[in-house]
Length: 207
Image (cartoon, one colour):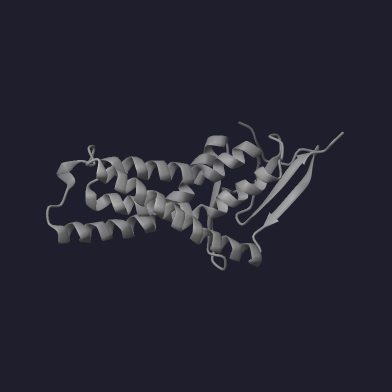
């Protein structure tokens, strides 16, 4: 996988996408819908697994006292929901490392409540590498939580499902950006520069 630290001479800007106020409002509204949909999916997954008797659950981790199970379940949910944000950005960083980026910059844009993990230096990714980086947290955390739910005790299963739903909510920006890149039908050799709440797409100049 190739990473460019300078824009090749034969490329020109094709799209400059910025998270302005109107888009931010739409993003927040969409995130609520994604949260609801993800919560329904994870609840259905939990109910289906409970219905077959949770055969893979580790029985020695169960808490026999209902009050204790509820307490630990709430504590686990709080910890996991708080942990989702940094783990989400870590997944972005791991994906960036995987495609060849050396240095990662982390940050929060407080006025828009947007967290990001982006290349620390000028970097241009191929279209598919950008999509891979953008969707990595949604895929890894969702699959990870669903896998852990198979082995987790009852008091922890719902907390893991909630964490997966919250992560899907936090991935709405990633999903939207991938949708923009895909809907515009940019070719595989298009280059994308990620700037946190902005990304710019460059395409080869037609000869």
